[in-house]
Every structure is written in structure tokens, then in C-alpha cells.
Image (cartoon, rainbow, N blue to C red; front, side, top):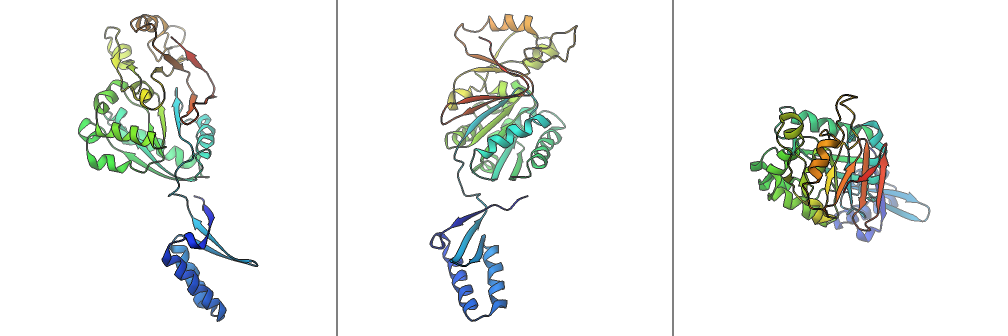
Length: 311
């Protein structure tokens, strides 16, 4: 953890702090340095530092939790959201927010059905804290694992004032089922429109699309090729589109095509033909991030791969 401080005018400090500073100045004038030192500590406990300089006092406010980010982003990972190569992507994005004390909510809904959901999102929390020691990260895993919880006002309250929202691994269709039309989704959209940053990875990038690719149902269960209506969150904050992460996946080796997020190019092309001609479909390679500045619309790509305009 690092100490963040910013210079402020004494007049802008709270009245109790101004009074303590005045008392300390009086103690120093009397050369009562023991009392002066105690008052300095009390001022520090109130969230401020006092520096004695030749040209007068310098008042520093500790922390910047009350600052609003100066920028907001939509950051989409094709995969690798907790891989070493993603650290610089997080750091460069967070630096542009203009503050070092960041409140982050990791929303576990996409993996809510998994017995190890706490471990999955706990590992992401540990990864961010360990990888970004140059920020003060206040990270909370929001265990909104089913529809009852995503409609619970107490859960929604936990994300209020959040600078960064993260959703990632799990099942796209499970995420849609338990987030669509809920109070939590409404709150996420509201935070985004008020300057928060949204980071999505893997399953969550699919779930937030206009059309959600039912990966497990096709790849694992063997259901007929089909699409599921997604959350269409991108339309609310950026541009209506459908995202296919893990676009260049090669886990199947030579004998099994697992590109296009495991369904393979052959099946994917048949699925794409099911969609209206004008649909905007984006493929994101693994260990690759698409970063959108939500104020300027500027886009950048970071990581090992690229972004593909599929349709």
C-alpha cells in the first residue's frame, strides 16, 4: 500500500481540522513541542498532514477516495484477465482515472453456479492487489450468485460509489439469466453513465452483448446451433454489438478447431448466418484487451493478439 496525499488550502479543510491546526500553531508559538507533536498526530488521524515550511504551513489531504475519476473506460478482455501480461493493461488504464485510491467491485454472477465461485473471484482479487502495489485498491467480491441476490437492495448498495466494476469468468447464459432486468444490472449501468469504469472478461463479454453465444450448451452439451438474447449492455454505454472472446483459441490442437470461443470456425459461420446482416460482431483474441474511452470514443488494443470485425 502507498500513501497518497494532495495539497489543499487550509480553508478547504473541515472545521475541526482547521481548529486543530490553529491549536498546533499556538502550541508551537509557546514552544510546547510535546503538545504540538500530539496535535500533529491527531490531525493525521483526521486524514490530513501538516508540513512546516520556511514560507508557512503546507496542508496535505491523505488519500483521494472522495475524488471522482477523470475518465471512464470499457475494457474488454478476450482472456488472460489475471495473467502477467494483463498487469500493464490494468496499470495504464487505472493511471488515466486520475486517482490512486480505487474502490473495485468484483461481481461474481457469471460463475454463481460454480461451487468454487469464491475461489475464482478471490484469486482475481488477490491478483490485482499483488500486481498493482502502486495503487490503494479497496476490492470487494460481490457475491451476487443468483437472481434473488441480483435483485437484493443490500447487494446493490455494496457497489455504490464504486470506481471500477469487474465481471469475468463463468457461463454467459447463466449471467444473462440472473442479471437481465435486475436491480443490480440497472445499478451497473447507472454507475457507468456517472463515470465508473467497467472491465469485462471472457463469459461476461458475451453476456453483455446483444446476442450471447451459448458456449457450454453448444460446445459441451451438443445443443443445436442457436443464439440467446444477451444483456445488450454495450448499447447503453457504448455501441450495440456482440462480442466473441477467445477468438483465436487453439486448445483443441490439430484435431479440434476451438477458435471462435471454442465452437470452431465451421459452426461459428453457420451461427453468424443466423443473425441479421447488419449486426456488429467483434472477435477478441486471447490475452488481448480492447479499451474504449467512454468520453472520447477513442479505442486502443493491448496484448498479444488483435480485434476482428467478424460481421
